[in-house]
Amino acid sequence: MVVEVIGVRFEYKGRVIDVIQGDITKVEVDAIVNAANEGLRGGGGVDGAIHRAGGPGIMEECRKIGGCPTGLAVITTAGRLAAKHVIHTVGPVWQGGGKQESDLLKSAYESSLRLAGDKKLKSIAFPSISTGVYGYPIEHAARVAIGASLDNLEGGRSLEKIVFVLFSKSDYNTYLVRMEEMLAERS
Ligand code: ADP
Image (cartoon, rainbow, N blue to C red; front, side, top):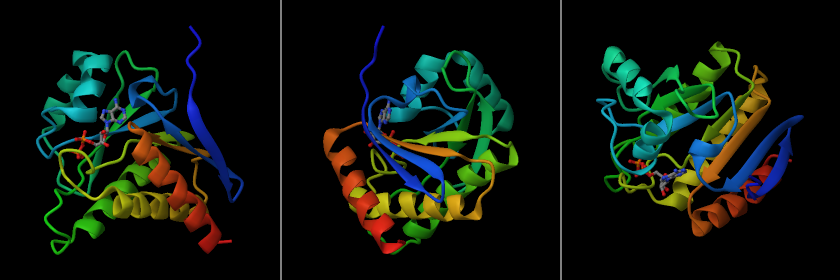
């Protein structure tokens, strides 16, 4: 089956950043990132989609790990998914912006990227963490996600490709605008 992917490829410091619209469970990378909760108990949104598509083995590993504080990340295998690993990170619940939400969101991205580097992974795909049920405004979240990713690529560890997978067309468009803006700021 040929799956058409809508997306734009950017380059930064000799590395690739793809921004695509689609379903992260279908993306073939070394690790996809899950927007998990602190109990790693599964839930709705992208978390539910990943556990449904990957099968029960991922949840078994999550139970053994037991939990993950907001802003940190843990790694499991990826069951039946096309990806090799799932990195579960916990973004903050948006409470208006005065509760260190942006630091915690940045930390969620950085922890995921660090874990990928520690495991010498070459490619990673992120959903838009915290902007679903957790209510973080997408315009701000996109800046945090892209900023942490560009910083990581500047550090030049193992990662050669970062993919942002946006479910909705409007989130996808927001990311594209932010990518152009932030690459221009750093050029
Ligand atoms: P959070 O609780 O961190 O806000 P959600 O899962 O509610 O996480 O939402 C995060 C983002 O993931 C939302 O923009 C949602 O539309 C998106 N999303 C949901 N399902 C998928 C999927 N299969 N692939 C990629 N993104 C998804």
